[in-house]
Length: 512
Image 1 (spheres, rainbow, N blue to C red):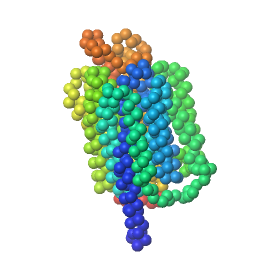
Image 2 (image 1 turned 180 degrees about the horizontal axis):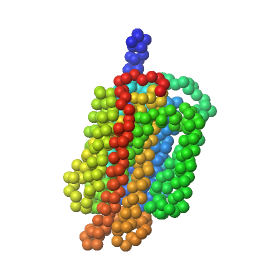
Image 3 (image 1 turned 90 degrees about the horizontal axis):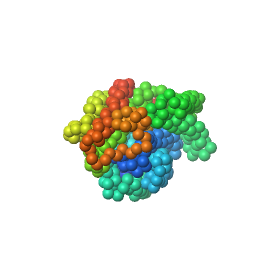
Image 4 (image 1 turned 60 degrees about the horizontal axis):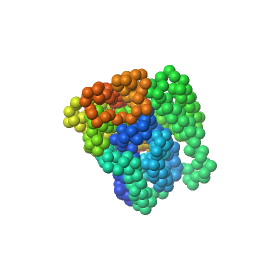
């Protein structure tokens, strides 16, 4: 190594230290915002407050759809402009979405607020990875990313408990009011502690016209519209209308046409597009996308419906059900940093993705055996196994993207994986809601063929006699719903086996 190279490395390490330390202090709060924004424990309460079961799937799907659809746009923005101004702007938008969520009096207003929050989350999470890419050398990135993953796991651990306490003591609105001081704390940390390194980009001091051309706004519009209509079709099909109904077939057809137009536009634009074909065509990107989509989809469906099982089938209060979902977060806290540090040590992420693909089908399969009298210790063990299994390979696709892509392309590659992690919950929670509502309609006495769309998930205090049959119906509907994450968990193994074995300790070329 030359003296000049040694000097460059030394300057990079000093810069990395100055950037990573404030990032560590802010990461916990950033991930708290992303995870506690909508703890699933509040779902039964919202169905009572808004008086509808029909919109339950939209509460999470809209959030995930917005956060996922704009990941690619933010990935390109961060590659062009750097992290600090975009992170601060995203946090400001996040505060607006949280406030609107808390003040919502109608279900559709709440859904709109969830979309605003999802858009901001795309900017916040992309910014977190942009900070790591700018500050840390390749071999150390899994270690630093695992710290963020551990913070996210802590957030998922405590958010249901805090959410349950707030619901029972102050009201569900405080699940969102409490975010405002957290947003202020993160804003101050990024504004005053984060000192970005000099931006090195071949785009230089780009003007606004050139920036707009680089952003591919037409592609983003096609992309967002295509996946929005897809979620709309999945949400309504078999739930509000039969799959053969024109009101389901039309948005499904529109979705296919829009996504086809998006793919054609990306092929035409090449590197100037939102989704450069030379990046997405890489084997690790394709299989990593499948893995991330199915892994996060399986986890989100379970996390979303376990509180319904606890509060409706088992009759627990929101606070108690929040405590009962802690094992998932505990498993994530254990596996995420462990896999991150071991990946930095060995240089490979594949073995952890494969372990993920083996453990999650077992965990989801066990959860699909829950009954109205299942021992609580079994539920604790099953959830802990799910948390550990999904967490041990969670960062793998992002690590694989950085292992095969140059630093200039890594931000876009990570944005693609983050989109997959948001797409899975957006699509499959909506699909799970369709399964749950349709099964519930056929199982509850007196419901007939119509889904109980206009009824909240509430049962009378008397849980004996005829209402015992209702409990059986709710439980059976949930079990049928859990078959979906079982299938998704099985698909993660296919994704894990398809990712290239590429070491982070091998220096990559600048162009791939």
